[in-house]
Image (cartoon, rainbow over all chains, first blue to last red):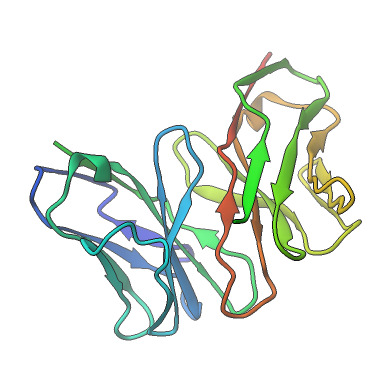
Length: 112
Length: 115
């Protein structure tokens, strides 16, 4: 497709389960970003990649959160042992080098 | 750290009214500034941007001018339409600066236009 896609769009899980969120960037985009958005707030940066290299993971809240982009295209954000406070919209964006970030539709995660 | 403060909402206006949504920033250095918009049921879309002082970004009738002296980037539109109803986010980054382009967002302002 032409835009950034994310899957699943909605995920409901029980506390303690692991979840994997997927992002498929715009074809050819070098940079890929993950953000988390709580209800009523703006997105907050989690981590980003240039090609397959994770450049900055300073926004990951703790070691239960990890991300990878093994072939420099699709990325997966994994949350282990989910907690209720992890409930949020998780947004992915991609960009060409030194260019505007284009956002996907987001994954709404609900932890029961 | 870097931060963005924007006008709290919600904002409700009548169609054809003049719109201003205030945005100020705190940053070390000279960031690029952005307005993103989120229409109901959709993802974030870039509305406009400015990369240096005194630049004016514009799109779809919206404008914002990068004011370094007041560290502001207020969003304006002369005559709003019902279709402008959305949540508006002000944001900054240090683009172009390869290796540090993460966006820092404000909390968002919900705008509702009534016919």
